[in-house]
Length: 579
Image (cartoon, rainbow, N blue to C red; front, side, top):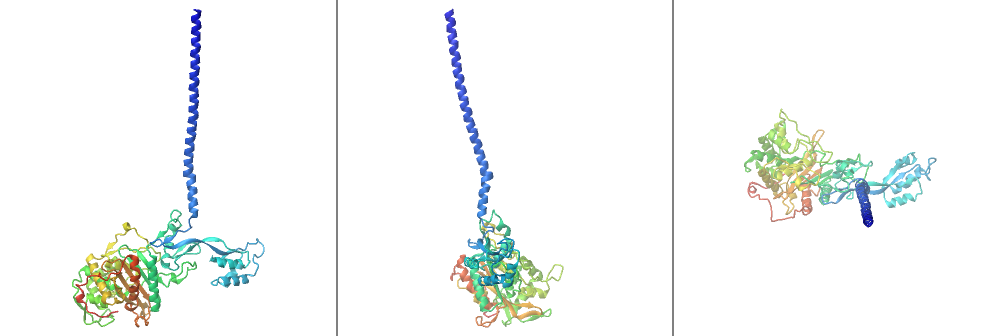
């Protein structure tokens, strides 16, 4: 029994020992698991925290660093990415009256001596203004955009109060190119006049100013247009010139020029009269360029059904006013001949048959009664004839004179949009200075039937092929268009010695892509123009020179094997000369 008791006791001890070992192993494993779990938890927390820091702290820091590297004002580019306006770091000349402390003058020499020295460095400065600023108690800018060599010369004067703070300036690398499109930035950094004003918020937006803002303008085409307008302006001793090139299918303004131009790199342009844009802000009576619009409205309305019908050309009086032509074209003209020779008398008769209401509605559909549709802030309001009844219809004499471009004044931009509708199938679209995505071209509104537009392409081509516009006939480019020479109005009526000469064109007329408007303000009779002042002699040649220069740039190459088919109307036309 004692043996059994001993054996049982021994067995009981072994069991307890085994239980202790098992418990110890379990405890060790649990401790390892707790430690491992702690590491996993800490790692998980660390990952979450790193993620939070990456989102809430690192990203803003990186963003702010990236934004700090951006210019304060975004870049403007042409449709091909060429920079037209950008910001750049520059130095200015600043007078600091506190340079040597609050007491005493900071100048070594007298203000007058320093002003004279500065005038030798900056000849455009004003002596009295410099002296005034150098005597003032408050600091001020003495000159902006100081060149390095100029800064060295100022530094050599040995005046510690003349400092050169670094700041950001607006720079137009193409100089005066497209100045009236771009506008300028004033000394306070505000955009003025042109797209600098329109795009102000976009250009200053940190989220958007990192990428250039593209315009519809093509700098190459713009340069060609400005060059040829200046050429024509100098040849005819004209007071000014203006022109634009418009995509007939989108309304994009490929070029827009008003001469004389201004230099947007100068910041003192607030009262410079050259800043005024003749294309979009000035309204003019554009004369015979309106005749194709009247004829198109009559064809569309069914008033003209047979182009062979002839109209008398004798002058006639109406309302105390005599309507007459500039030349004797014979006793009768049909519609093609009336356009080719530019007959006021025949166009007035067509308008009378069309009626005041129909002609007025056509002009309204073409936007002639409202400011031109474009993004520029300054847009001229047309001189729209007053109506004589409740419907606003015009009198008979007003209807007749408006038909050939008198008694109504619009901008060249109005005319460009109207001619685009004449030749593109009959659709009027607003002009725009933004480069458009092909998928977002506005639908526009129909003004003329497609068949009417096709007929007008024939007639406009005939005017250039053998009429008043033949000096615009650029070989291989199938140019079509119409001349317009209108006397400018003055205090006592029209001034016979002051003309606005205009040519409205499109090319290539077998499949029109671009409208070209060129205008000269008060051209003079010169040897170059054979002693003539009319558009046929002084503006049509501008278009003839412009089109071959810009056509290849825009994908239109000359092709003498193609042309508009005018075989059905050419037998109706007699040769001759009009305006």
